Length: 203
Image 1 (cartoon, rainbow, N blue to C red):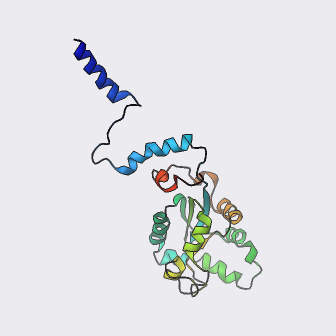
Image 2 (image 1 turned 135 degrees about the horizontal axis):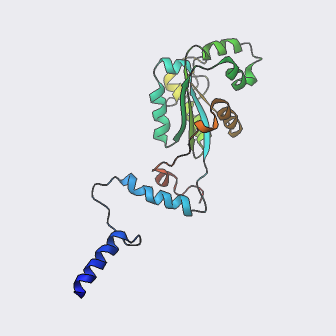
Image 3 (image 1 turned 90 degrees about the vertical axis):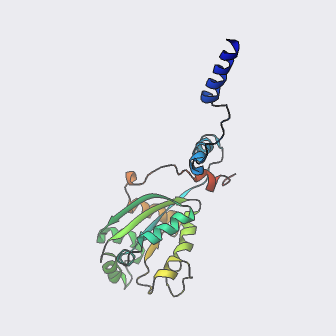
């Protein structure tokens, strides 16, 4: 009887005690096993990763040429987290606020005509130094000067059709995100690979 009770206690303890070590289940996805570690990191780390958010807009020529998926893929592969996404026909009023520093330029009417010629895809991305990194990924405004491997260097042919917009500073990103997104349209969610990609950032 004593032996039987010891076996039962050992079995219950093994299954239900959180401090009991349990070997990983064969074939269980590694990324899900990391989810528990990521939760512990969020709760107990005194140095959480610093995060930024930036605005990326795929302009009408990028949408017309069906480049949206390829542009999204680049940001996902880089490790950034998508926190906002929508397709819309942009209004002239919104453009006037977005391009307020260009309203006095002679090319502004052509810019408005271009940006209202079709739908745009607006995205908010989050990650460590995402603003600076996104600018490098997008490339020079003039595609003739943009390096191969950047969005504009690979997809754009002319400065007036340069496929994509990216915020240029933390202040600019904050202003633009508030223009293009309402508060509830930007989501706060935990990505299961956060522990793997950002574990040592900020320490």
